[in-house]
Image (cartoon, rainbow, N blue to C red):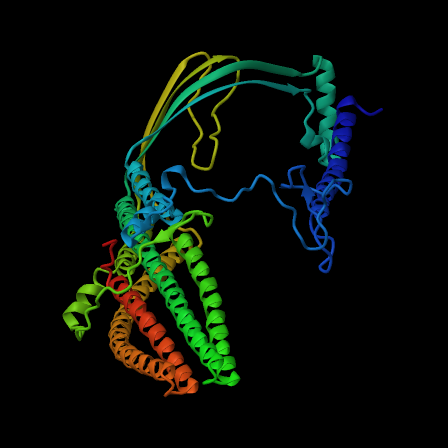
Length: 544
């Protein structure tokens, strides 16, 4: 006859075996079931799970839902709205904004400044977090529970130990029967309250190196905050000048259209007087139509550049913005050459160079922190605990990888423990050596990035200076061309109206004058953009 203990053990082992087969199957079916929410095939549209407002939800799609999208068109989420201008940043209707005013708005409205600001604040908090490692860690824990254990007197090891074990177990069973059996039932409930402390006293400079690395990272983040503002200033400046150039082309083409209509009227008048021909009238009308076509295209470009300006500022594209006309302002065309001292000063104040320099210093500090991992650490730890009830515990497990267990507990009493020690790393399978090598490689890469950034900065500064010098020369040359073309156009128009010149010569002069005028205007704004590019390249750009 099988004893109850053996039958219970057999049943328990059967449940364990069945569970070991059933649980993985259930988990596998749950895991693969998530494929129902993925696209069914690589060549078929994905059917998302859509809420009533069009929001895409996790999980499998409902085939009976309303407003299901067709093909590869996604649903419209009605909770997403286009951004309206903020009340404090709304542009005033009828006010022509200067470049400085638009830059002020951009520095407040553009999301880039807020992202850069948050990154700088996060870097400052990282320094505070690194400094906090010098302080002890205190942890308060309150735990309550219930434990129960039962001993039926049988030795499970001997029960399953083979033939010899069966003989010994038979003898023990007889002894149990003679003595009435050895059985233990223990249970208890209680509560434990603890206050634990950890304090790393000395680590051969690791924390100091980590703090120095975070300080340099904070400097880099603050530099990049300034760089973000410089980038916004440059972006708004170039967008402003580009929009003004497009607006200038519209104004000039409207004047050209008026001139073309004037020539066309003159040709039609001469035809009525019997002095012209229908060919002259047709050519004049063709010139007017061509100018009107160019004007329509220029007006489309002006609208596009206005949208680019609004985007650079960071305000709603629906804003109605008027800009100040800056055409006709004199430009200094003095020849300028970059000196080595000027380039050196410009490179050393560029945000990207300064940020790369700070990143290189941070990488070197991380190398020092990785080296300190090979050295011992001196620490102190302790706790105070109070236990009530009959909860039999020798330690309290910590929550999380960094929380140590609380030791030295006794029932219904206070207990305290304080320990001091030194830990020496001996062998870790090469992990510390690999981490040190990684830190050294990252430091070498940071130094290479710094050198590359410096070289690239010199190239950008020289290229920006060359572009400014070329654009100023082009502006001066286009001014002389515009003066000559205007003289030719005025003379040919006067001659034609007097019956001396021909319409062909007048049309040629008209087209030449229009092209020269547009070239001079484009060169003017190109020079302004080039000047902004040089200021940005030298790290000295500002709102003024």
